[in-house]
Length: 144
Image (cartoon, rainbow, N blue to C red; front, side, top):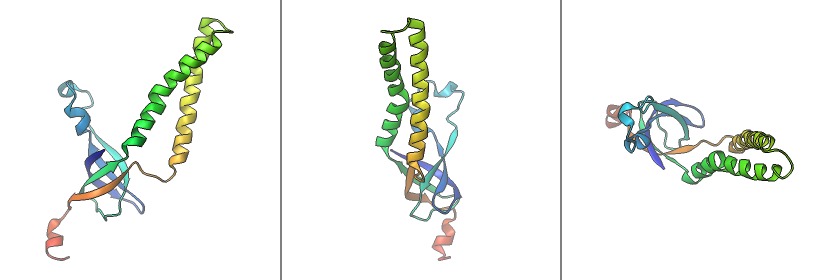
């Protein structure tokens, strides 16, 4: 998945980029009345092209990890609730089974989030693939 943004900060191993939520807002029928008004978000990305503060860049994100994370945090907890509820309802009352299954899903979500965060380590969610416009193109034209 590719998106565009403006470099706001350059760090030693990554850049901080401000991106607009264009893709989500374009297809939304409620975009005109949305409370968020397609606000800008900050993201981090590795940069091997040498982008500078103010440059407009295109970043690419790994779609497979995005889909995996969506499954991990939205679908899997529902599966945990269903499985734990079915197993506990064999031995406990319905109310107790429901409460414990929701608790198990919360524990699952927290633990998987911590493990995923630890696994990510120093990785960043995207990488700069192209510098679209430079902050000061006159400096390049004059050879500075």
